[in-house]
Image (cartoon, rainbow, N blue to C red; front, side, top):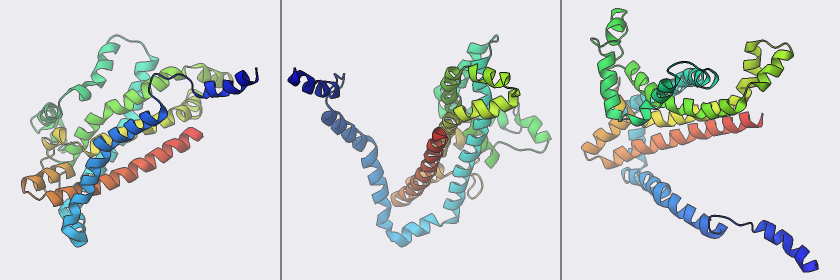
Length: 282
């Protein structure tokens, strides 16, 4: 009896698992992560140091590189902000309402996932060019989209939308309307119920979707290169500048730009994750 009681906690601790033991699973996870992520990133970080610190600093402070990084990160941030607002509206409509064509609208959200980025860039360029369906009326109003930084923002917004919508949809579906109805019985208006009941529950998912959209947009190349115009110091993005340096056989310079993008992306995503954890605790 005593042995059976003593062995019970051990059996509960060693509960059956579909995967191998902790040691083997952890070792395989670390090996796979190192092979796919850590080793390539380490090679990227080591490569620019052939330039020396002064050479790396010259690349980092180059006006052309600074302008390209500013456009890539600034455009990605603006696109993620736009998708945060309109992605929430689209997810809300898809979850809370029933209407004809809902399945078609739901499928259209995934179109940026399925569409090759080069095809998306060509389509956006044709659409927003000065003789395009949308570009012509906008040009008549004095607003030029294609081959400008505004076109970059349009492309980055296009490819980031599904991340916000698909992150919010399951959270909204699980949330239900009970809490809103309870708030209404206590005298809260619809706006008050949305701001004080719904939004706190959606904030972690909203931040996650925005972070995913931002991360996807920072490194985007195919859909941007056709609509950007690619003018140095004006509409040239950082990934394109990396390609240009690779074509010039400046591998260390290309890796230096990649390290700068990696460091900036890591810091921004770390801050977003900390914000998400803070919102979840609240």
